[in-house]
Image (cartoon, rainbow, N blue to C red; front, side, top):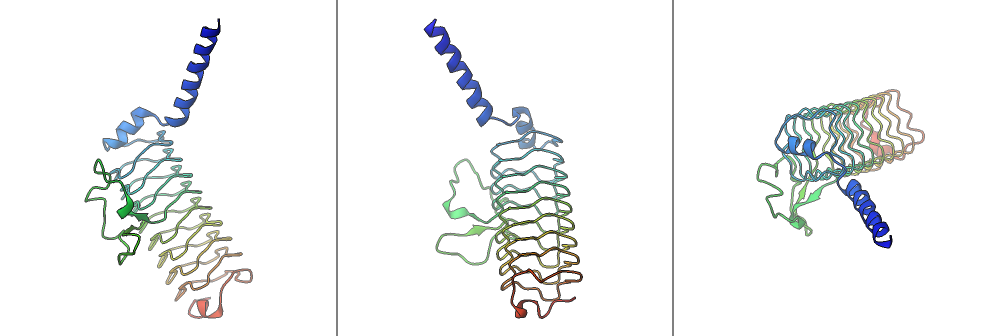
Length: 253
């Protein structure tokens, strides 16, 4: 009786651990790795480091907690995709459709490619893109910047996301949520941020030059040292924003 009970307990523990670690659908993972469209797929916790996902239709796919370090998603359709708590460090999201996507608590900061384990061709030559490499070589190595240029990110949720040094130039973020987002030194020039909620966001030293921020919410947002040259701040309430007068002297109201 004791042996039977112990065997049952062992089997139960095995299934619990399996469901926790391998929560993605293996068939779905195989599809995307073979560059096949995967709509409404389950890739939760999947390892997609350095994956080539260019031009794929991945709308409504669940990438929550997935590891997409250095992945190439250029021109992918990510409409209403779920990237909650996903690792997108150093990824290429240029020209993607991220409308309605959930990127809350995701990590899109730079990726130190010198410290990477390159075994198995994790970062192939086509993944290391010139647009992603930050200028200069630092003592801690060369950094691969996450780029989301020319992308549609309307009505997306990026609250509490780590967007440090990310490149969002020329993208449309209208009506998106970036509450408490970390955007230190981010490139957001010539972007559209109309009616975007940036409450509590860290925008220190961010480049917002030429961006349209009409009706944006900047309550408790930190804009110290940010570049707002020719930025459109029409109907923006700056009373509770954190900035110095020199930071907004060339902005348009």
